[in-house]
Image (cartoon, rainbow, N blue to C red; front, side, top):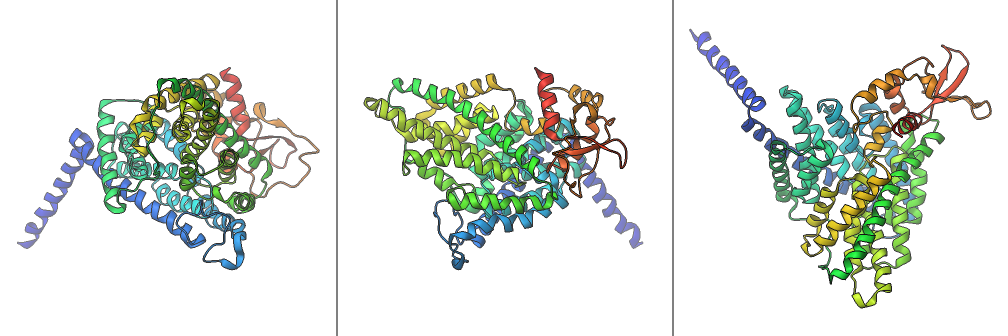
Length: 540
């Protein structure tokens, strides 16, 4: 008699679970529930990631942020003096290099492009392991001196969380991409204490479209993540700056000029980033897992010369905008950040480019403001105000995301008084960058892999029609006389380029040899940038 009695609850529980599943997957209120769940996860993920970075930085340097400490010794390794800066990136690379190479190669780099292509081409599917690997690898990279930001990793972490929940519930692709964007919005909101910018980031950069339903669920996720993060860490702001205001409308032409120059600087930053990566690809011939450690020697040497490049560098950015550095040093910091970030990404580091673009823009804008104040003393200009506007304008020029750029600086500072010059400069920066190139700092990474998400799937079809032999660079007997790296696979000249894109992406250390059959003669080499050159030439 007892068995039937016990089976009823089980059957009832099963039916209840199925009903809840149908409610979550198939109804709009259920989507709201999913957005809440993802917001909680993204908020907690941002807090954990933040503490990971601080903890590793403290372990290595004795401080939670070393960037404004100067060329001093680690309190944990006083005997090494400032020379520990040379070793920290090497040790970090020895840990996160094999971790990324073995478990999640997509965790390498700045993260946002991987989320964009998952939404545009894979129905929002991101492997669950990416979240954990990205969090640990990026925290290790930043904590041991990598000059990158934490927003790219948290976007990828939050998006992977949203995607994993959606795949576990078997939601349709149309809803899965919204869950991915919810994770991205929640991550930005919790990291920067910027809930509005988080929503717009998800719409403008991840979904690349605006819709009422998407806006609603992203708001829920962003607000939830922000509340969770603020409850745990308090009302912490990244930048604490004095109040700035627009003195008179006569200043607006100067802000407009800054916007034009900042748009070009954002475009330049994106090109420098990938040019350095190309150089690293061309030089490196060893295994990919070792690349961050060996390249860490160069990064360490740069940190030894300019320790302000250690980690994200928000204290240095704040000091620069607040007027605590001389003009020449501001220029040095701007150029140093471009090189340090490019080198960190080029050697295989893991971290974002959002914060570095704000840093570069802040230094450049402050330099412009100092110069303008010297030329027009009667206007009584505030160089720091130009620094704030420069932050947004350079990011807008690099990412072609004007709404996000305006909102992120506005929410970071809470200063509405500069909204007019901010909006004008950002729009002009975006416009001039568009005129120079349609590629952004995010889509350019995908183009290097043969993925053009601004075009339709015809790009994929075209690369199926082009063979390796057509795009390869012919063999140079003098340059190709040395031994091949042991882990470089060979390609056949008649293979469609589309079929080797993943192989090219996995082996960024150099161009892959093209052989005329197994053990045959070397015909040439093919690298990611050869495919990118073909796509650019086709677009003209």
